[in-house]
Amino acid sequence: MRNSADNVKLKNSERRRSKLGLFFSPEMFTSSFHLLNVVNAQDQAVGLVAALFAEKKVYVYGILEKEGVEEDFKELALHYIKGLAKTAPDAEVYSCVYSGCRKIDFQDEAE
Image 1: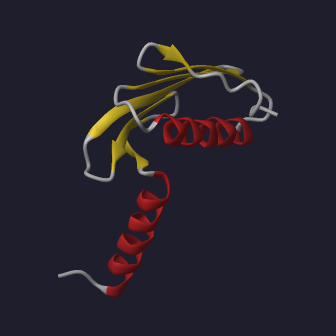
Image 2: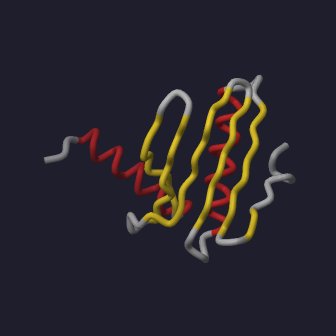
């Protein structure tokens, strides 16, 4: 049986899902590596995002396998990359993010 705190968490989670349609489901976190599944509202894995931390550099790779949610994926990945940049302000962040076979360009949003 869920308590009221669980219900609040569930409601907040449902709200986030309905806004973007996609969310991260962490697969593995270490001090040098993150692996996140990208999951849709039906809890189906539709892609992944991985981050590797090496000295003063952060490498982010992402791929979306499902069509029709590219904008949601772009927004989700961009917020994640911006968050990484804030947590390591002295690190250079490199990203390579794809939707199917098309590269997603963050150049305009990076600023």
